[in-house]
Length: 342
Image (cartoon, rainbow, N blue to C red; front, side, top):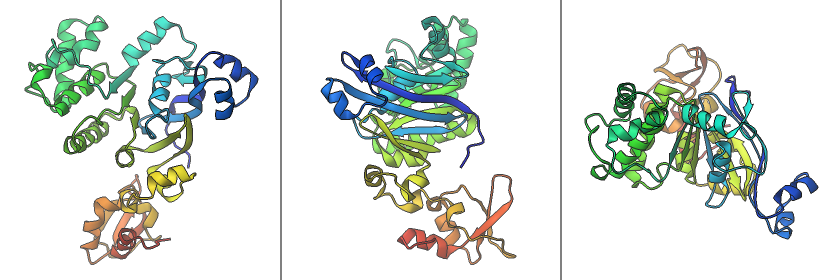
């Protein structure tokens, strides 16, 4: 299905090889295999990766530890220098722009949040949030006003004068998020930002993240090894293995049509109700009497109780509010018990 939104970041055939002679290997082979790399004594951290990330979407890159996902996101922001390929952002290949221009792009157009909060311990919450603007040379009154906005946005109003040591892990991560938002980034990179948090706090931070995205509509590249987290947050997911992207699809498509056994292993224990949307299980046509209407994008899990409790079907609508079908309790039960709904 074609995405109507413009492409914000276009990554084409990116490689990151570690070891001596990497450039020569890529010149000698159009697409060197893992065996080619082993023979040459090279490690293929990222292999021929291509993704197009659309404006306003949450694009999740996931895989097991060592799959190359964190290396890829650092290549996309050029925190790591790729061996080959293109990373086009706003019409410019980031791999060829001068270092001075790249620094300005990172400072003014990119936000980054990592697993390690990396807060400055001697600065308050407000000062930490304002720090990127301080680096840009923004005057104190302007940067503190902006910092207050983002601190409130992430739910820390009233804690502006706290120091990092006085905050919980989840609150510290919120400060990291506020700091990355202070520059109003066009592109937001988050590398396993919640993985160090307790499960309950992690769930709260996912809720907070989705709330922020509903308000801000950022273009987001999000790294995780947790498939539950990926399907909860993602518009689309790229699954990596051994440095290679093996499938890029919506969470629903990954569960219904895994491209490889590796992807199938990730998805086989995921309840379909978590990923299937009403548009996938609805019956075509409309009904004269309905209990109400629900968006086709709603996941079955989120609306199952509501549909099952009703005596009448629900009308399913698209983004324009037009009826595209109906769904009833039987269709929901089919999904919940694993019975085919096709």
